[in-house]
Structure formats: C-alpha cells, structure tokens
Image (cartoon, rainbow, N blue to C red; front, side, top):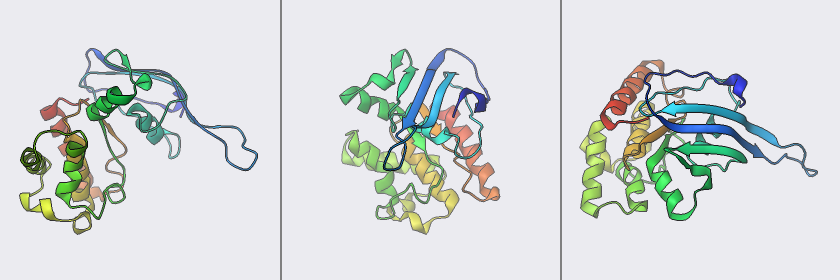
Length: 217
C-alpha cells in the first residue's frame, strides 16, 4: 500500500488522535536467494481525529490489512511513526505495549476463521479480560453477558460454540470480543465482506451505534 491507493472518508472532525507518518512495513523476499523485499505498506501518511470514522479504499492485496495490523502492533513496522495521542506506539515494549493492545483492538474480516471453535462464546469474549487480568471471575462473566446484549445476542449464547452460529452472529461475537477491554481505537478489516448482503447492513448499523455508545475512533 502506498499513498496513491488511499482514500479517506471522514464523518467527524476534532483533535488529532492518530498521526501516521511515512509508515513502511516490508517483508523479506522469498526464495533461496532472497530477493527484493515485499513492500506491503510503503510510505503511508494520514491523520485520524478523535471520534472519526476513517476508511481506506484499495484493491485486494494492496496492504490494507497489513496496515491495520501494523497500527495495533500485530505487525512490526519497518520504519516510520504511528503517534497515538502524542506517543509513538512503534517504540513501545513490555507493559506499555500491552497497555496499547488493550486500548486498540481489531475486528477481522472472516468471522469463521478468527474465532476458536474449541472455545465457547463466553470464553472467546472473556479471553481479553483474562489476559489483562480485568476484574474478578464473576465480574468478567457479567461483563461478557452485558457485551452479548450490546451486540444483539442472547445470554444463553454464552455456553454455545462458534460453529452453532450464522456468519452475522459470529461477527457480532468478534465485535463483542474487540470491545471487551473498552478500547478507544478499533480497526475494522472489511468486517462485512464475508457476510451475506442481507446481513451487512445490520452489522454496519450495529457498528455505528456502538461507536456512538462507546466513543470509539
């Protein structure tokens, strides 16, 4: 992805929350002899205001997903800066990086492959709370039940498994998991592209409602 394939859509304006400058994420070339690096993200610049909805438009394989993963540090930037509220998150490590990952979450494109079929829905949504040691066990369970309600699922879904749900319901589970730690910044990786057209509008409306309710960027 380079500067030429980025378009943005801004729904809100205000103070800058995320400032990306000359961001590059390269991968080593394949083959026995190596080769030129794969430039998945190549010199990208943009700003996102607090509370803004910001969209990237580009052809398949141009680096949108890699960029999103780099923003939340699931991928390591080769160079450049990603400043969140004045802090360059590409320089974070240890507890500071863990705190950033609490504050920045991602909803993945394919709800089927992004959920662990061996875990119940309750366990999936509760996992971030367990990892970050948020609250007591009973408080975590209650938090999960609240999240299920907020994304339009039922309390009894807590003990069911992902394969028992439709694609739209699985994406709701993924959204609930992303919101469990009450992040300020959420990356959506084409969250409705794998869903039936009849379900896409429901998920987009849900995301818009949750953005307003949680104050998300």
